[in-house]
Amino acid sequence: TLAALGSQAGGRAPVELGDGWFRYRGTLHGRSDEGLFFALPSPFAKDRLVYVFAGNSAFALHEMTKAYTPGLPSFALFQGEEVKEQGYLDEPGFVFAGPEG
Image (cartoon, rainbow, N blue to C red; front, top):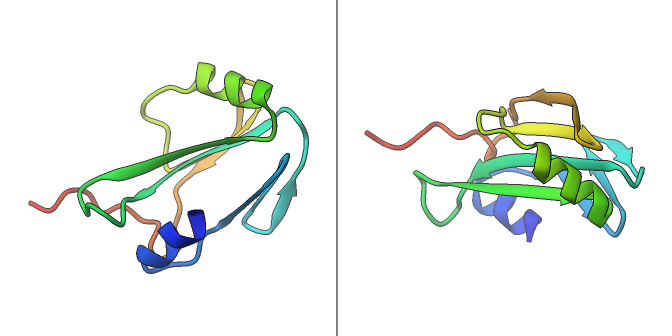
């Protein structure tokens, strides 16, 4: 689960997922066209990432994965196929430092 990934990575998940909704950094998102993409360090391999695409509906998930472009920062809030907000996660355990040299 998402909580397990966060706790194994040493932090608390900034996201809570439900059926047809998600809460991101305390704000509830319940519109059927909203979705969230985020990347976090894999608790199983330190030099790998886990990518999560969560849509409030099948249509939202379709639109956001269709619009996804490599190079997005560690999170992006979607409304339909449009990125409304994007940035980097700074919660402990959700910061990827890159592969060890």
